[in-house]
Every structure is written in structure tokens, then in C-alpha cells.
Length: 525
Ligand code: SAM
Image (cartoon, rainbow, N blue to C red):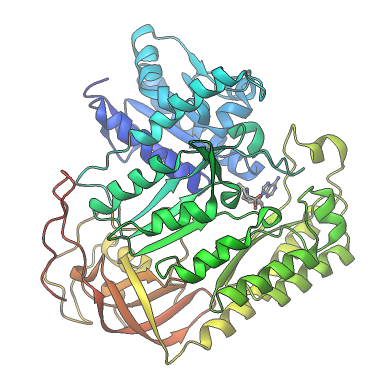
């Protein structure tokens, strides 16, 4: 595969973003070169998501689009990897018979070898875990775990990779089987990675310039690994990662309310570099619906958990997921959801219209009986309520100083550069060079400035996040990217804080030399 080019597009959650990073590392290690445009690629890969129909439709439409490249150059390889490959093998081949490779999320460690197979034999290749039972014999399971573990262990970010904020997987799969959710079917059973592997990976990333690590799992707080016959739970794992010297921020997503363990709050309270942030989906505020979803808690228990969180970590910032229009959801059920949203006071909310997923219990046993218009109306209503709540929370910060990890130029600034305006014009006058068209941006999916003015010319607008995950924009200079700074808040919108830099907490780290030793830091800001 040496010398071939590839174009990889990622859909879906943080887990997919991480899988794509690991896959890219493997492809680069076999001499393949990344390109930005499908037309320049010898191999086109889609890393896919099956959580909602909408995500799958997007990939089907992309597959339709790339057909032209395959028609022009039949040797181009088209690969569908991730959850859609696992879930809809036959449908994919009937819709896009020119797809050459299907590779499920549990088989990604084999991707380079599978691609080489397609390339050599010019035959379609399929690698899915679906046929294997969840009750696979213990030995077989151990072998699979080892080879899957190899994918995470193969991680070796190069000098061009932006590791400032990195994900580290702590868990694979999911065993919760919420009645609406396809994840246990596409990602397989829940398995926790060995704590020593997680800590080593985090340490390696910090040595290469990482400041903030987010531990990833479908239900991260259910983490449990037997180490020399003793259980290591999530609270202990957090403590171990927190001890890594040089790590400035530690987060984790996503938490599952029914499995909560108060020790986690104790650790959050006592470890200053763990961010006061919790993403904890409730899905509904109606006990009847929560039960139909088989989530294993009541609304009152969820609210009590939030109270406990605030008792331990008073400034905790909360994010939630809600599903609207689940089978049988009435106006009364939805009113209960609105109630929970108002009572909790989330920092942000992810609201999804229920989308029936083939194979799930809800799809087998219930009718998708809430009309689309009603789902859309409830969706908008929840978002409007959250928007009010978010605005009030953010306005309360005006005049205060927040700590921000500077991630890069804001979306508005990047748009100006993309449109061809010279960088460094106007505003702060500190930027000496035009910015590179790279990579210090956040992974896809981040919310950014929605129109508030910091300066008339936004080409110097930087963006970062507070420990509580509040997006903050302010004018600054390229040399500040990667620093931890203090920002005085001057204005707020529902999604964003706007402010002025007041000072530097920690300057950016120097570029590491990739033998693991960070080089000296840049000159002071
Ligand atoms: N494992 C996490 C949990 O259940 O708490 C979340 C994983 S899921 C990939 C992310 C979000 O997608 C869920 O919290 C849920 O709100 C949403 N989601 C899952 N299945 C869905 C479905 N069938 N239709 C619409 N949204 C869905």
C-alpha cells in the first residue's frame, strides 16, 4: 500500500473521531498519504455512525457521490468502516455495489491488511464481528480483546498531529441495551481496557504536547478492570491518570446515571486538574418513558444525583442528552422532560428526535407513533428553553475572569482566511505571519462564535474552552495557541463567552522532539 493516497471522512461521535485518528496512524505507518479531496484518493474511506437514520442517510448520499470516481478509475478502493458496515452489510452492497471493503468497529486493527487484500486480489473483502456471539468463549474473547487493544496501543502521533486535546479510550462497546439504542449491536459487549495501558497512552500524549485528555467510553463510569485479582473502578482510574505530570486538564464522557459511584465525585472534588464537567444523559424526564427505555433510574433519582454532584463540586457544569418523540411519548411526558431541563440548569443540551433503529427492542415491540412535526416541535421547544438557561448562566459570568485553553483560531477567523483576506490585517496587530492552513482546530462538531462581535475584523479571533467546557472567544495572536490564559468576560451569547485576554497562566508547550522529550517552551506571550 506504500505510496497510495487515502481520503478518510468521519461521521458521528467522539469514539469515531478517535477510531479515525488511530486508523490514520496505521495507514500512514504503511506509507499511505492523506489527501483532502476524494478525487485525489486511491482509497476512499467513510467511518460511519448508525445511531440515527439521518447519520446513515448522509453516508449513503456520500457513497452516491463518490461513485463517479470509481467509474473513472475502477482501481480506486471504496471502504465503509465503523457502525454502518457492521449493521447494514446487505443494504450497503445493494445500494452501492461498488463498495470494496466493509470493516466493523471491532475489526479496525486489521484495516491495513484488509486493504492490502482488496488491492492485491481485486476482490471485495468483509470483516465484521456480528456473527460472533456476545457469549464467545472466554479464550476467544481474550484473543479478540488483545488484537483490538493493538489498535489503541499502535497510537503514535507524528509531529504534524495536533495532540493539544486528545481522546483516550477506556472502554469498548456497551452492555446497557437501552431499548432505543443500536450501539450494543454495532460496537459489541462492554470491555474495559487495562488501566496501565490507559495511563501509558495518556503519558505518551502528554510527552508529545497534550494538555487536556478526555477519557472516552459509552458509559465511562461503569469502567471496571480486574488487575492482579483486584477491581480497578473508574474513580481509581481517574486518580491514576490525574497523577500524570504535565497533564493540565482531565475530562471524561459519557456518564450513565444508573451506575453512578459517589467515589467519582470525591475524586473530582479532590483532584484539581479534573474539570468540573459532567456529560450525563437523562434521555427523558418522564418515569414512564425512562422505564420504557430501560435506563434503570427515575427522574427523582437523576435529580438527586445532580444535587449530589453540586454538593461535591459546586461549580460543576452539566451537559445532557434528551430524546424527544420516543414511542408513546405524550404531552404530559414531554412536560416532565421540560421540568427536568429547567430544574437541572444544564450548561448545554443535546436534543435528538427519536429515530427507530432496526434490531432494537423499541423497534421490535413499539410503534414509532409520535409524528415528525411533533418531534420537531418538542425538539425546538427544548432547545429554546436551554438557550434561555444558557444565556442567563453565561451573562452571570460577565465581568469575571475565566481560565481558557486556547485551541486555535475561531470559526469566524478561519472563514476570513479561507475567503482570502490577508491574515494580520487590523485588530490587535500582534500577528506577524499568516496562519498555516492546518490543524490546530477542534475535532468536528464544536460550536463556535455565532455572530457576536469581539472586534470589527475577526481575523485575530481565537477560541478555547474553560474547565467547565464553555466556549470562549477573544482577540489574540497565533503564538498564544496552546496556552492556558485568563480571559475577562465582556459579553455572552447562549453558546459563547466573549472576552479580553488578561494574562497567561501557562505558555504553550514547545514542540516535542518525538522521542518523548518536550523541547523548551516558546518565548513568553
Ligand atoms: N451511551 C450513552 C448513553 O446512553 O448515555 C450515549 C450514546 S449515544 C451514541 C449518544 C446519544 O444519541 C444518546 O444519548 C441518545 O440521546 C442519542 N440516541 C441514541 N439512540 C438514538 C435513537 N435511536 N434516536 C435518536 N437519538 C438516539
